[in-house]
Length: 96
Image 1: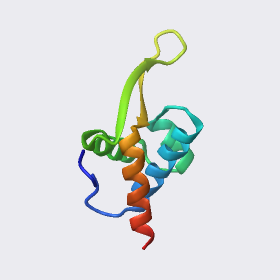
Image 2 (image 1 turned 135 degrees about the vertical axis):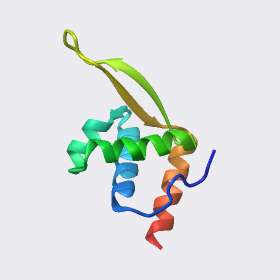
Image 3 (image 1 turned 180 degrees about the vertical axis):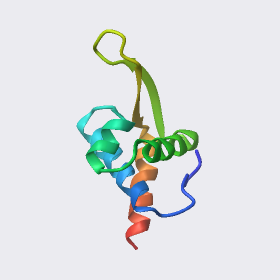
């Protein structure tokens, strides 16, 4: 697993990682639009961060159909155990 998927230390990256840790602690999977809405960020920006985390092995994802006829599949994300450890270390490092 790549230890740091980020080339910068953006506030958006920190917020998305914190949201994923919160979702993991609550035992739920989350998706880009939900994260973006709750944080006031663009969906495209959140998707970019999630894609970097996925490539680095910090998150795993799965698609699920949203309830409702004709609704598009939604891609849900969750931090892996190793990803959660790496995310916590990355956030701790940012605090220094």
